[in-house]
Image (cartoon, rainbow, N blue to C red):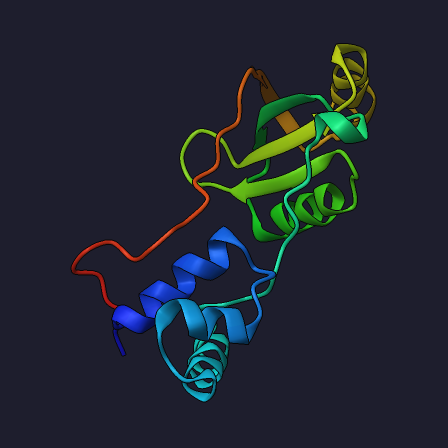
Length: 157
């Protein structure tokens, strides 16, 4: 089922400010509160809305240095990939990661206090893993995230 104009408007408003009450949403969209609530429930049930998230300023919590670490693993099998995935999930420095195809098996997005911590993370945590055959680290100078994401024109669920 495709998203209609009301669903899209709700998604936009909630991505801009997930703290808006149902009453505020209904008022802004000029619909009944019951309609608004039902649409939000439907979007949640369909898995389109998956929760509310706080946007944290990493610098203000002592994690002002970010990097992307590309990792190649060997041998390339499910057991090695799942084991490494469990390992990186446990690391507090890792904000998110991608399991990839192509030359790199993983891309890790990490945030630490400074370059010394970045170096320690690479040398003391990652380089100790026997399944890693190559790593490439890129320091992030600026990270801009799109605050509102909508379906592309013509895309269907």
